[in-house]
Image 1 (cartoon, rainbow, N blue to C red):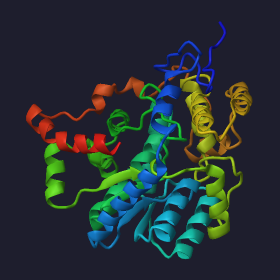
Image 2 (cartoon, one colour):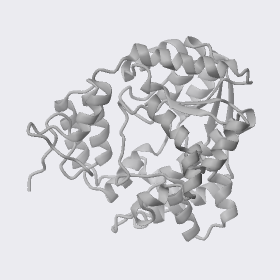
Image 3 (tube, rainbow, N blue to C red):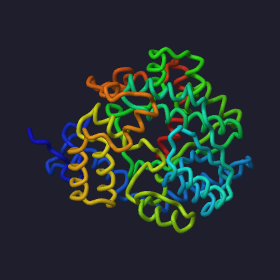
Length: 378
């Protein structure tokens, strides 16, 4: 049976929740158009500047915290914070144990050039590697542990200095926006897998510090009263975010390095393995579909270019990337151990309902003001 793909992007008819109109355009493209086609960046930047001014007025040691991987987007966020908006950022890096040489060079070049404070944290290396290994064998992926680690260092230092802003370089305009059916790194899932693997709750909870959106309403109220809460936002949702222009600025201003201008996630040595493992869960390189589709919608890639790249990716989806042997050796795994014929994923451990905060109706009502603010801002 022939695969139907959106006539505008390249999402296929088996993508979760997809629908096509009479012209063959998918609902994801229509949703993107409603938000971004006529987006007022001037108004959005004014709003962003107001948020920055409010954070600066608090007079804290740092105006904002930037989770800094050494990759393109986080490097540019750090650059904007210091050079364009005059903020006092704290850059924090989670050492996931397999950072690329490019990322390390960029970090230790960019930080002194910008004159910003920077912290790199390594969490219990031997145990962290065991956590990774358990997630690979039982959940078919390893990114959830890295995400948990980034949250760990972010939360640790936000609380330590009561930093009012956490700024990321993730873009809902050009980065893939995977639905729950495709991927999840939610702590509820990670916790279940690690408990099943035999780790103690004490060891698990040492890494899985609760994220802001996991907190019940009463704890949010306490943070607000203590003026210890923070706003987390994605800078690319307020500013134009052209990958090639960003690349040019970083190279010229910060001597930033990359092996390939078109390559994402140069900060991670095993990034290509992520897609390879995902293809065992969902055939058809679904991550590639999402990323290419976003770039098509934003005018940074033609559909013909995307189809050519996607067809090549699908043809090679069962071919291990060059980094695969190093990946297996690093985690003491075998090819048979990661074959994943059952297609194990987060869906074997959690449902959408499991990601919801369990609390009484009264306390849920207390969270309504925060939800209203979020809706107004979006």
